[in-house]
Length: 339
Image 1 (cartoon, rainbow, N blue to C red):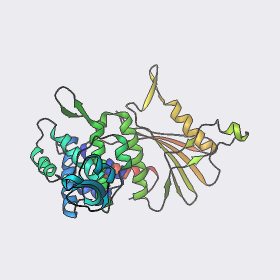
Image 2 (cartoon, one colour):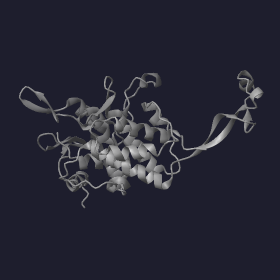
Image 3 (cartoon, one colour):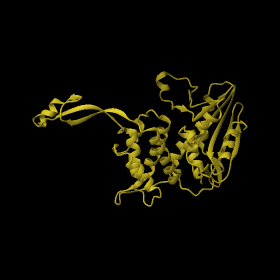
Image 4 (cartoon, rainbow, N blue to C red):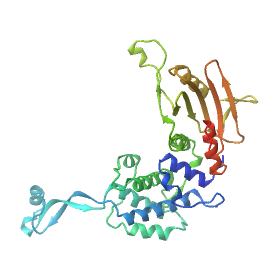
């Protein structure tokens, strides 16, 4: 399926809960810019913003060799290295420094981008990299992004870290040449499934403030001992929308094929339907309740409805290859909210 770069960027901004950044760079719907170029432009612009605000600094303990004593004297280490005879001492003192994890992640990412071949923005990236002389580079891993604490400019730094993490996950290193290649993550079904779910959830949170939007755990309507109940699988919705007496359980599914094939006929993916049906059957009865399975449009749009005596299930596709205004309209229309 084809998704315009502009729309992928909007999906990211909603998923990251950073709607203020939608206009950070302007991308017209017909621009022939690659996703990598877009992310680099976003990162360059956001990094310039950080420099204007001032990079995050904090006090941290450092070991220093001094002609005298300041801070905490490390006596044992000074004696072992025979520093006193030369009129010096090894001390530990607090230094106000920009060499913090959030800045280390940014500088390391900039250096990784410099190793991409034939990069048009190389000189601009190198200029930013040089400005971070007091910041060390580190070896990145997923844990570092999770543990990095956000400083006094939370919005800008969080957005920068999100872009850095996305680039980290999709830059493939060539061990022989020491260069990188960017993998278009929108072709990765697993990454896009996570992005699609987060996008839809945050879209409704922002666009429908009158609705309560949340993930919800549903308990099985089964009688069992406490020990046996621990064997039951967890039922947690992708999102539940609630307003007055209306409730919608919406499950997002990102697949290369909307339907599974049974000989020559198309069928709804049975595990998806079973899962949603179990949610509806076990949900505490109160008000109107319906379920929606939402897929991206692959080859053709689908809007199918099924019902029993108490519930309605809708299988719906969303065309991510249309203008953003169409995506906005279709998502609001899905829950019967008019512009």
